Length: 252
Length: 359
Image (cartoon, rainbow over all chains, first blue to last red; front, side, top):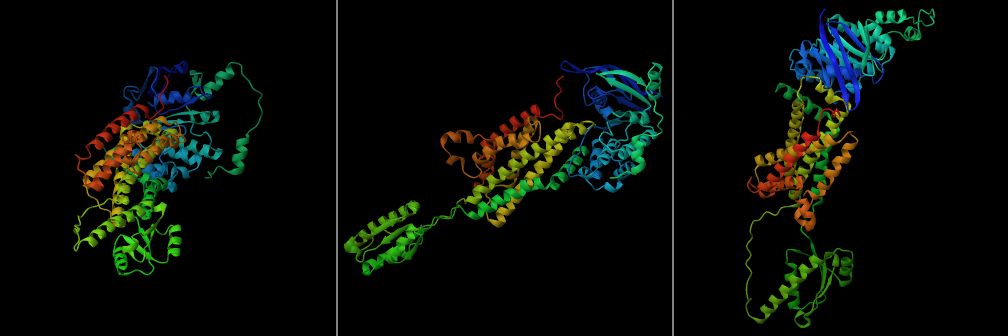
């Protein structure tokens, strides 16, 4: 495997405030990479710098061998983006929106219905975004991110605010995308989500990366440091109860 | 280019499907036009003359007949009491009590309605004129002179013809300013613009697509106004349609600049109507839409004649009512060009796809 993203000594300052404080990491081709951390840790800022939406104060980012700052448009062509709380134009239906985004990438080979099928929104093709549920909106947002058949897909808190069924459904979608060989970078507040989806995790706090490992290794490291918590021999948790009682089927 | 076309297509679809935008840009001005057009501010004043006679002799009867033959007067004959009552109710401009023997009495009692003073004065001065020529005619065997009337064909601008270009300018201003200011502030607020920036699209492509959409809408607005004016009000359009379209686009461009500037200043959509109305509302009344700027007090004219809407409505009005050529309206066009340059420059300074980073 080779690195598709190389971040070196990345810094972002807003006046006196340092949002991202000299971080370096690389992401391998085809892996699902998670960025975890409390609110304000610098996750979204880091992501938006890699996406070319924010200019770094200093440091370099290379994506697919291209410098993000100098070759921003070339980088934007090979990435797909799902932003936190991004909305789309009103008065256009899903197919029309996908058509518009295809045009923005100057692509003529996009089949909107195939993309909608991929995120299981075929029957909503003629609906507007505002008529979708929270989970459907996120899935549509991912479909838009896949319009240009990107090498890297960025997902910024994709499951925040979703109910357990919709979350699990989205996880399946992310796994499918990964299975197609795409690199996925996601941020999340949910540890179970990171554990299920991510090959490696970077934990950020106060603008710094304080750990970067596979989920298992992070747990092993913690245990090796002598950490222990009272072990309750429970084979299930409350979420399992909820899903068992209400079913895994998506309701929307 | 394909991107701009596709974006323009999408933006036209969104515009047409937005009922609120459609209502305020097309239906509202048409309502105003219909209301003002049918109220008919420009009907000629009526001269309702009450005529009271008792037992006129031959001379007097001849005079009364002459008065009756006056085409501008609507003569109502009746008893003094009932005619005065009509006057008091505002149904007569003047009531004339004609003595039986005009040659001897020489005095016609005239009761006038101060509320219709100008009509009453007109009747009185016509009577004076009449009395002096009648006197001359009595003194000489033949009339001293004859008035030979020649009708000159003239086109008097009706109020609807004055109003229509003004309303057209006003609605194009409203459409350009509000649709851009609202939509772009909303796009900014909701993160639509940020999502677009995550694609290789150039911001200018998106702005161009939206501007083209609104220029097309403004030309459609103009076409609807003109067609309805021709069909419903039989207005007379003196000038060139090509020049009209040119000025419509120039005016729309100028106000698109204003729309983007407002969107640049507004942090939230709630702030848009406040800022926009601050600029647009005074222009509604001072920009020559409903009344001519030349009827305003001098100090107000000094401001009003330099407003963007005044140049715009002035140009449209001169083309439509006077058949002005491009040379005749050069100052209006220059005014629009200068305002256009100022507003578009301000737009480029204030309007950003993303909030400026403080770093």
